[in-house]
Image (cartoon, rainbow, N blue to C red):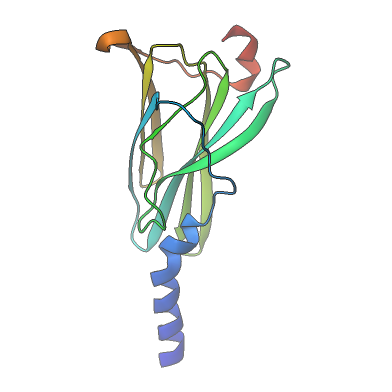
Length: 163
C-alpha cells in the first residue's frame, strides 16, 4: 500500500512537466514583436492545464502550413512562456490556441483557431484564458501611435479568401 501511495504522489508531482511537453517546433521569426500575449489559466483540483499556440502560414489556396509552436502558460514551465512574437506583416496566419488538461482519470484537449493578417505599423494584443473547462481568446488590433483599437473578429480557415 505505501508503494502505491508513493507512486501516486510522484505522478501528481510530475503532471505539470508531463503536460508541458507538447510543442514540437519552437516558433521563431525575426522582427519586432507585433503580437503581444497575455495568458492565464486556473484548473481544477489535481489537474494541470497547459496553454500553447500553434502558428500556421495560410497558403493562397487556403491550406494551413505548420510553422511552429509557443508555450503560453504552464503550471511549472520548463522554459519561460512567450509573451510576444513577430508575425510577418500582410501574411495570413492561422493562430491555433490549444488548452491541454491532464489529471484525474485522463486528459482533454480543447482548441480555438482564428485567422490574422497583421497590418504594417499595427500591433495586436491577444488575451487568452482558461478557467476550469472554459476558455476565452480575444485579439485586439492597436493602431499606429497607440490609436484606439478594435476587436479582431473570429475567422475560420474556410473564410480565408475573405480575410
